[in-house]
Amino acid sequence: RYFLTSLPMDAKRALRAARYHWGIENGLHWVLDVAFDEDASRAHLENAQASWVALRHLAVSLLKRDKTVKAGVEAKRLRAGWDRNYLLKLLES
Image 1 (cartoon, helix red, strand yellow):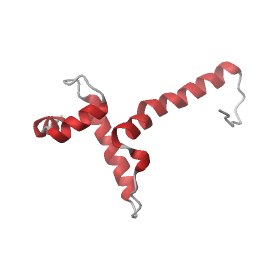
Image 2 (cartoon, helix red, strand yellow; image 1 turned 90 degrees about the horizontal axis):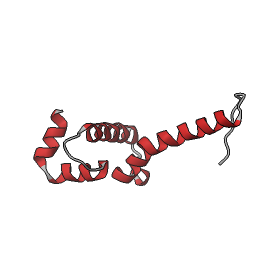
Image 3 (cartoon, one colour; image 1 turned 180 degrees about the vertical axis):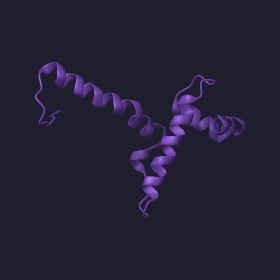
């Protein structure tokens, strides 16, 4: 990978910047793509895409905050779709 920056940078700082970038990618965007298949979204009407992004971010936040189930975000999302009581518990938390 190549990065462009106007900041003065030594090797350690460049490595930290790259790791920080991938930490964000892995911590949120990867979860959104795996659990919600966000990259395949076809929302194109006016603000639809931004609205869906906001809803997905809210859902990820609720799912990550739940500590009663030891599972990943995708498994929790599926469970919320199958189990109305679990969904209500997430929404009430």
